[in-house]
Length: 373
Image 1 (tube, helix red, strand yellow):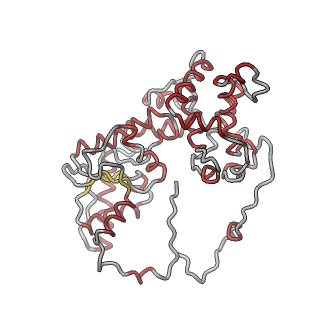
Image 2 (cartoon, rainbow, N blue to C red):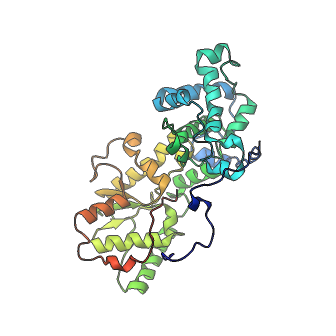
Image 3 (cartoon, rainbow, N blue to C red):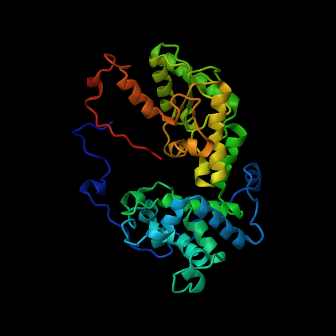
């Protein structure tokens, strides 16, 4: 880790407070498209395996359902004043220079269709209302540019109206999924959850084997018999990490184990659902809900008292929606979604670490907290 007196190896333009905007390159990302979904995955997640008949009509009907269900979405369709505060905030624009990747320009692809079919002006005078039909050309633009959005919400931070552009992206993707247009990466991941319980497609025996391997690693490092329990019925805590923590980011998984061991907490993971990440967030509401429900079902099957989400940005964004998606969490303590960072803060406030932390051990390093998702 960098010391205070070290100079950065790579010069960062943001250190001077300015990140220069790229030169405008019209249509630079127009041919950047995701691979389309595979039929075998779509069958598993209950979505059309090909473009449905009368897809334009069905898309507009679905759009109407979303507007009725999500009042915020309807507000976002109407309140943007095109001030441009978001234009240079999107990493996809900064990386491509394509002005269609301005968050406002991308959102306008949905708003044009909204004005055409859901406003009197667009229905009567589409040209004057800057409205557009939902035709093959518009669908192609949706598929191209709404999947050039990571739903990071950086643009929303700078929007004076607080428009959540991620909600607009999610709506467009849900409409497309409903008519049989979706991407391989997202649908493949969701299908793996239904098959194996996690995004990486790790079978239950492999999950258990790797937990045992990490136990050996910790034993060799510390000399302590620190466990990574799996399917431990009656445990106090069900940990729901991103599955990558058990195979790629193993230092994080080891950290969870050391923490719970230190605190004397009986915890476990579940082979039915060992994944906090929820790619339904990038696909549609029904799969967002179904993937989330697996966490609740796993907790009930094991009879745990508490569910703790591991560190993963989009996992937590989906996790905090649990009561909205699948009802009250009154059977758990606390009766609401609980993040590992919240758990740490609670333990600190309760004095669990009093007299046991040496603050001088790390006072020579610069530490920052950054959510990688």
